[in-house]
Length: 97
Image 1 (spheres, rainbow, N blue to C red):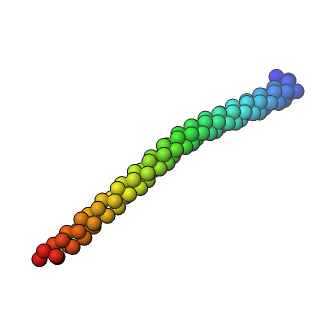
Image 2: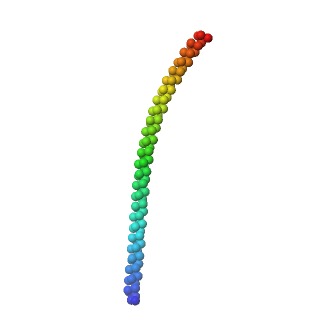
Image 3: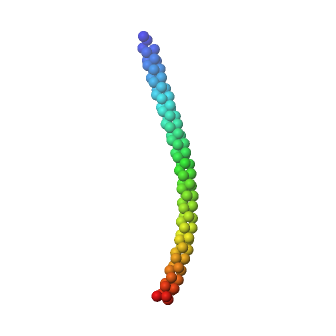
């Protein structure tokens, strides 16, 4: 085979190898970008879900705090009634004894 032709074929083969390597790098970069975009989408969905759960938990805490305040008020009123009853009992019980 002609040495010039052999050299040209070797350069052509080397160029094809470089082209193939460049295409492979391009596909790898695209795949990594796609993977990152998918991961960002999943993270966004997780963030939205967690924000919803946080809102629900905050609303539940507010309802529980309201219930605790209501029960505390009723217990305070009940304690006041019991103290009044005990005071009257002492007053009447002490006078007759």
